[in-house]
Amino acid sequence: MIEARILNNTIPSDVTQFSEIVDEYATFQRDKPNALYFYEGMTEYTTWLKKQFIDRTVNDFIIAGLFDNNRLVQILVGYKIEVAWNKTTIEDTFPFYVIGLMHFKESSWRVPKEDISNLDELISENFERQGFTTGFITIKAPSFFIKNTKLVDINRYVNNVFVKTFGSNTHDFFVENVFRTQEDLETYKFKAFRVLLPKKLKRPLALLTFEIKPEYKKV
Image (cartoon, rainbow, N blue to C red):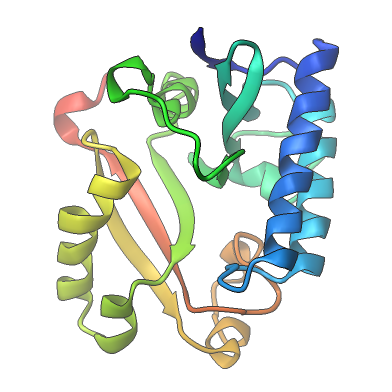
């Protein structure tokens, strides 16, 4: 049976399976030649994710999981930007959230499309009902981003091509910055958003924001 739901940090099997799947993700960065991040940096990040899952409430830190017969096979992690800043108390000062990690347990694993509830909807609904309608996500920069510098063309590409991969049709996406080199990363002037990025760049990355489309907003 296929089930999509929010993980619960009071359920021991949820905690165990989340720990296992993020450890697997870190190992992927070590063993695969096309990995996006350095293993050391991802190990530090996944250790941080495990701690946040235990310490935070679902209002502030949420994991949407896809289960196949109670086996966790896909995760999508989201959290408020103040969590990324390691604030002990979340004050909801800024209405931004972050999509931090998305991972399939097995790349060969597939489920018929009609059986999948989009995990991003569980994340978005959690934050949007709290008034958080803008999010951040870091992705591997497509070659189009690397070769082009006109933001209008890059944003058009994101909303015509990337959204098909991410599966979202309720949000508009915008490129905040493209990091082609380590120097790009180190000289990025918006320090508040540097915590959303790795310390060392292995491959070109892009930082995106996304906002719910006006026709889906509620007041």
